[in-house]
Amino acid sequence: MTATAQALLAGEVLDVAPALLGWTLTVDGVGGPLVEVEAYREDDPASHSFGGPRGRNRVMFGPPGRLYVYRAYGVHWCANLVTGPEGHGAAVLLRALEPRHGIEQMRRRRGQADDRLLCSGPGRLAQALGLTGGDDGAPIGSGRIALHPPERAGCIEVRTTRRIGITKAADRRWRYLVAGSRFVSRPGFR
DNA sequence: GCCTTGATTGTG
DNA sequence: ACAATCAAGGCC
Image (cartoon, rainbow, N blue to C red):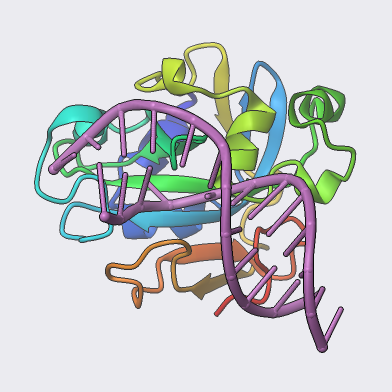
């Protein structure tokens, strides 16, 4: 991982999540700029880390800059970036990115030709990038997984909404989107 | 377009 | 039982 990505992820998750928009995530060269993320942390009933470290959530309490990958609804994989400070059980759920690198590979993995349906949703994004439970705990920058800053920093308009698909603490507006992006999972969601 | 439903499995 | 989801099918 670059020094700047390391520094970014070491921060508090509510600062990290909006700042991650526009950063390009790639796995073996396949990926693109993040356009939608959600924050989860330990004092948050909706978070897997709520109640302390146990079972699958262990990686969330480890050092920042690693992937936390879990299975959702017994069907899909979903990937997070663990944030700091270490020991706090916080992570950013990767909900959507703009397909830019390795688009043909994404189409093959997804069985889907429409670019807007390649990475618009956490399950879709993980499938398009080839992330699975085997990547749980993998450090960013280890070779397969890279995170690069936006080409032009500071010109991304961030919008917030409630988080999606949860019932607890649903009123916290911890979902962050690039305003106007065509590649978010649910553009009209409030 | 919006709403409903089934798939499928680790976790508490 | 339930879940940080998705795709397909019905209906409008």
